[in-house]
Length: 262
Picture 1 (cartoon, one colour):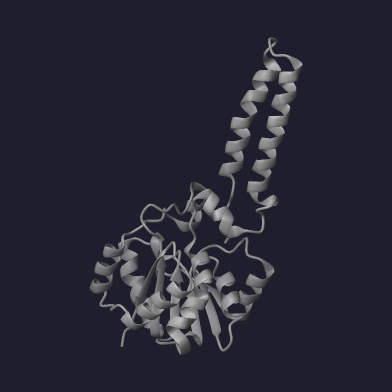
Picture 2 (tube, helix red, strand yellow):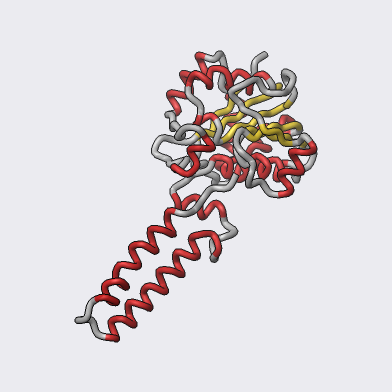
């Protein structure tokens, strides 16, 4: 799932065009001033071009996300894979990732030794690349509405990782979805959720997500886990924190480690 980067380009171009328009229409301005205005306009257009994804930042999704103020927990998962391996060990042998851009997470997980990976994409994949569509044809990745039961048997996966999906669900649907995620896990459930104050979906993406993201506090999540009879995986949490400290890893998203249903 691609994220549209349009707002910064429009902002730079619109504000940059005002001085040029004034120079063009004011008879009192001299020609040297017009030259300066043209140079400034060219510089502004170059900056806008770079940030639009075609220039020097075009291949860096993480940089673009931070420029736009759009923090992706799915990118966070990809950064945290080595930390998760330290925390979960053998439980990383059969992993299900649930969330947008799951193809990229699954692709990275499959590069790890002795790791099998599957994915569930909850949203549209019209802009998916050929590799992603191939994974869908093979059944490695499925497109499914997570507000309904998942198409897997209980304890099908040793570890289930969720990102950028639960933030878009109302509590009504969370009451259905979270137990389902725990049902298909045998060893653990890891949730990457946005923090209050972070921006997530923009207006252009609301048609895909259905609603804006709701950033909930850690205390809200803890109360909700208790209500759904899910317990914190203290052992995995301690190992995750130790591994993160050694690698100077500081997550931008909230990370919750839960035990599955027994």
